[in-house]
Image (cartoon, rainbow, N blue to C red; front, side, top):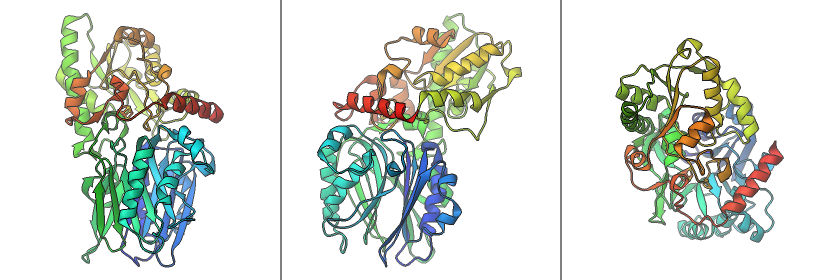
Length: 485
Ligand code: SF4
């Protein structure tokens, strides 16, 4: 997973306003990737790109001294979580194409190319192990004459070609030399992308394209729309917007609502926080039926902070039980799911959550999580609850059992790492060492999100794109993780 953002101001806007917006926007998207960050800006006359990228959090990778040098009317930025490639400098984003055959293009993306390894053996001369380079190479090659006059028709042909060849889930923002800001979303719209605009008070506007609406709220941009699956958008330095939708498919990733996006964001006009409340209500109803039939008597509802908080509040309301915080999160420790190795994740969970012993001791606890993927976090939390003498423990997950890999940018491409793969609820409970595990079912998940065109592949094994190369993708990812450890 990664966070991407692009901003364009009118021609001849002085200074680094675009880079400043991108920087502040990246801070709001930091939860999407913490390995590295980068910004590329461009000033039309004299056609100069400025690029800086480095490892670490946004504030570490992009110091203020550097930001002041990222001059230009347009800028794109990236907060990286490595799911392909390794953590070397050359794999960081944004990247700039050489412009040998036309315009220079700077690009950043969020997502994964499933057939990357097959394509990279055909497209020789790649300098990195990052799938963005492949996307950039294929796309930029088509923009023959764009160095001097951009043709939206050429950009459309480039995007059509890309969609035909490149399988997977990916959203991208780009600066095309002389033309402005360009963005596209893969034919299924697996990774989110939104368009916003801000009045500059003189009849002109600046525009922002971001992975999440949380950036718009922070930067005072007004939400315009979700970029449609398969849509290409180009915004010129005069504020002219051209767009075309090249696909009629749609499969939004359900995990964006359930876990990944910021609670204050909207996706497809559906509030992430509101969906999490809905998920909790529906899971609360299932729990109420089960509790009345079985000898399980939770006394308090406890969230695993932070993502599962809204669901835990809703469950507590449905069950009429007290809601309690049994763990306090250390805000200065990385979000563990998006760390790139199991060892790092396990070490960081210990640092991340401090138990509130008075809320644990002697209590029967209903522990709420947004999802149980590898089971790493929850196993350690259950261990802490037992250490501090909790009574019965029931675990409730608002995401149904995750039994199949994701190749589209959420980092679990190996099936054997998934705790629910090949296991029923009772077996997962045994593996976690708790009385019972209760999942929401797929129908209720769909209804809680409230849109029908969802990707649910990691739950039901129905992939929206060809995943023939998925096994190879998973194998190479495992190799990269071993290399990183
Ligand atoms: S497989 Fe699961 S995590 Fe991956 S895109 Fe589909 S719904 Fe999202």
